[in-house]
Image (cartoon, rainbow, N blue to C red; front, top):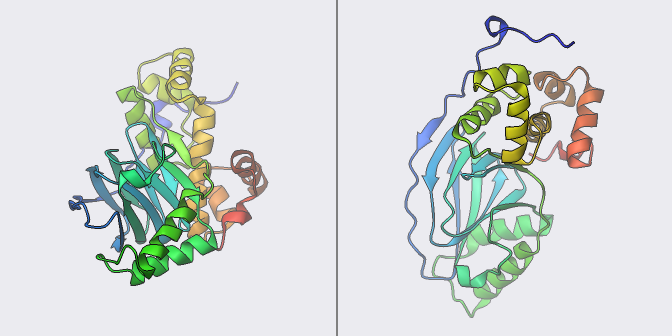
Length: 274
């Protein structure tokens, strides 16, 4: 039988000391698309908020997480995320995030943008978003060259491929709080026996409840959480060996196998792109 540490032997799961930032209200623009760029400083949590328009967020540099009531997404640099109108969300900057954002009137969208979704940004899309953020004025001429560029940009980002960077949250408040705590210390073992006792359930009932709430077993949820955290660390130019050790894997081979099982490619596919 696997040894399970008692409560006295368990590490305390300390939470990261996040800086809280109230969201600055953004009024509806006078054009159907408003393109902005700004910095969210490292270790900052932008408080829960909504918009009356849809948003497309991408970080030219830096890595972030985005949370809704049901899910958590990682958004590494050079990836993007769609946020529907009226969807309450929280943004967490894991390092300095140089955000480039499009605020888009809902009538320009089709039904496919009805929930948050992470996407892979092509080199063409990345450079065009940056060019638009740097050069297109707020009151651009809709039927002029700037308007044509915005139209082309929308066509491109509407067709970017989705990527499975989403981690579901349990709806149960106790399990939800537990998952947020685990996310703050992804490299710890987080034994199921410890957490089921911590939340006042038998291991069997805990497993059944967690799978029912998230669609994932507790073990698979932890594996995805660690691999997603590893993507961020790779983007921060940490070595595969360092990440494997920090994430609690016994070897780089075990880590690489787990990584490829979840994302379908080896860790090196995500390195060197910060």
